[in-house]
Length: 351
Ligand code: SAM
Image (cartoon, rainbow, N blue to C red; front, side):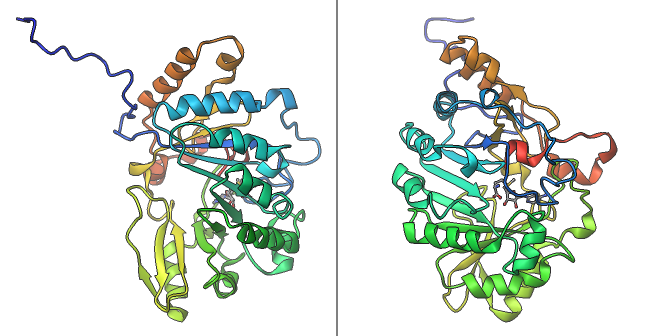
């Protein structure tokens, strides 16, 4: 029987939500632009994203006001890290303005961007001044001809290297990283040249296992080079030592060069899935929220942002999505029958 001292447990609506596997919501990745200036065959192949492909109209993409509002509400639910991505984020006009607005949101402690780097040289200093903490540039090889081929015939290596140099010179507070997606028989033989060029530079290289994102890249497990193989190859030439994670759930596994020339990382979502610690949600350019990179469907938030819904109502919608989240695709990958699964394309929700 209850008396006046009985503690009644009420649903903790203001407590940061945990999903069905007990995972908090800490990171939000925002695709600020669905278009890209590359056509990498493993991400946005020309055969699908040719000149007749219907990308979003400007008014279909979330505006800066809408992105800022959603990020503010997400921060109130526990999000502290934001990453701007795409498509290609630097194709979004006046991106630094958005960065400055997101920088001012209470609770955001880490503001990052992933880019192909083509337009970075002229924007790096402005982005740093606006408050961007760090930049990740995708760079799959230093071989100019292979680079051109891996970008689907749309990219040149030189401007990307200029972009990396400008970002390094700008001195982002949390530095510059490079993402290299390794594909068997495509660029694995160019790993050593990347390591040689960047070790000791202060720029951190990260090798990523080729993933089965989307439906259009004809992914095949034989094309995956397991991270342990990448590490063994580098260690044979430049001895490495494993480093402990900087924080629980860190996506990359880090190693330091034993001679003191900095560190590298690997991201092993195929050989060692890390769904158990995944605290990431992804927002598409048109305002659909996905709770897994390999999702088959998402939740429309744009309608609520545009129909006069209150902050409380939009926040509650976000919270409910996270409370219902049960995804752990990468851990279940081996058991799945891919034939029946239509996944969201990576350019749409970002990397
Ligand atoms: N355009 C930007 C860029 O190039 O960095 C941002 C978007 S891109 C989708 C983000 C990252 O996803 C890139 O580093 C890209 O290499 C990576 N990516 C795309 N498809 C991938 C796949 N199938 N497996 C692993 N990484 C992939």
